[in-house]
Image 1 (cartoon, one colour):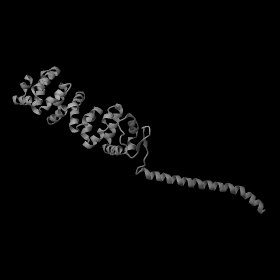
Image 2: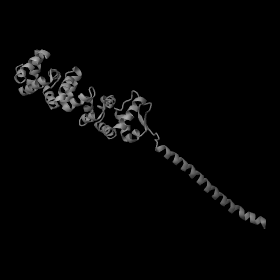
Image 3: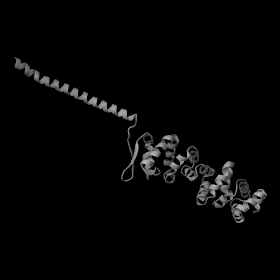
Image 4: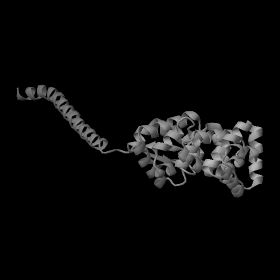
Length: 272
């Protein structure tokens, strides 16, 4: 209590005591002193005085509160209150705190923009998930979010490959993903088996080729002619028919020539 009233304004300290209670303040202060010393307590008290009691609740909910103080201090001032509220929210808040301890303040920013999904984006793509979240709409994030838990267990190389597909052609990817959801309810794109079929053929699939599933559940890519491919197929068929007629005509001429060579000597003998 002495640490909190030392740096924060007296009025702010009294307000915190009333809103969260002296026992919670004392518990958080003790955790911070053990975890990081008096300087961390001072920083936490300033954050709580500026951004409200959820800062204290968030630190009480965090396994390593010193790292959370550091992460909150790195956020823009307008994001601190929202981040603290997310961190203070029970079990999800504890998961968010653990992920923030591992990956830093970017996790909080992703979760603020996309509540309930942002944290998983960073867990799937630690180096670029937060940046991807800033590029995606809420609808796109929620659609992709259906598979993020599954994607956490696939090899990192496949996750990186999928990220490249999304990054390079976001519009076509989410248009395809919407169709995939409708055509294959209950199937996931977050498996190593699926990605082994999808990634090498992503250009074909986004261009119109279909993915079907065998009875065993193994995905296969099925060729589907597109607007450009279909006329080419018709042209190829026409050429094939023409070649058959040409070959047939040549064969008929050759046969006739052979027949004439055989018949002419006999016909000449008869005339004589």
